[in-house]
Length: 111
Length: 114
Image 1 (tube, rainbow over the protein chains, first blue to last red):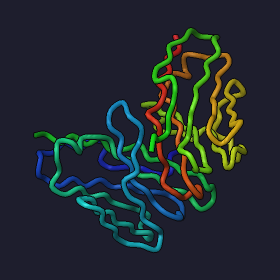
Image 2 (cartoon, rainbow over the protein chains, first blue to last red):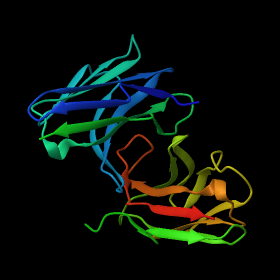
Image 3 (cartoon, chains in turn cyan, red):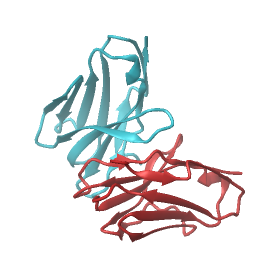
């Protein structure tokens, strides 16, 4: 079974709007990572947040982590058409040591 | 930096044939991972290596699947014999210094078994 579950599965917004994607997980983790995948391409690492961090920023990206709720969110501000892609959270559960991916959120940004 | 290089990009084969997927990780990276992606099951970790040694192959679906890493710059994933349910996109990824480090993915091999 998947360690990470993402919500929503699909999101469609207008350029300039903000996009928020959520990720929930089941067991304790060491860190949580977010990746982007453009159609027909490999995944690209966006940002990593450690279990002792609550919030992290990188450009237009903002990631939060709530270990008590076992959840994380990725916020993309001022979205652009080029942000259209699938976004995945990934984590290493403390009991397995293997990077496990969620099912992803498909984001469409309309120009 | 050339990134992770996978070949071929597309492979179409008939059921029962042997398939070999190839990967060249980023120079200096000491971890290499093979993932499979399907619509139904998402991204599944098949196997990973550390310093060319297989560490965990518990994700390999069957004995028909095997992976090798003869040196730090090359890995193969072999399916013999192939079956239609093996149709998927297979990704190779590498990282430096640890299972917790960010992964660098290749662009994948899309395998179709008819």
